[in-house]
Image (tube, rainbow, N blue to C red; front, side, top):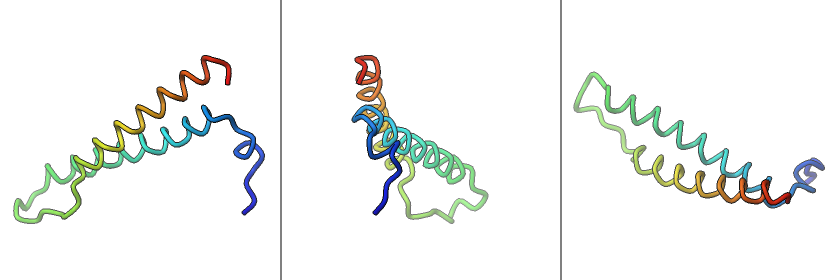
Length: 77
C-alpha cells in the first residue's frame, strides 16, 4: 500500500492528532444521532445503537489523543 509522504514521515504527535481528530468527529456524529433519537416523533420507534455510549467513549479517547498530540507538538516533535 502506497502512503503519501506527509503520512509516512509524520511524527507520532501528528499521527496522534489525526487519530484524535477522527475520534472527535465520530463523537460529534454520535451526539447528532443521539439528539435525533431523543427528539423522535414516535416514542415506540427506538434504534438499537447506543449513540450516547459510543459518543462518550470516542470523545474521551479523542481528547486523550489530542492532548498527547499537543504535548508532542509543543515539545517540538
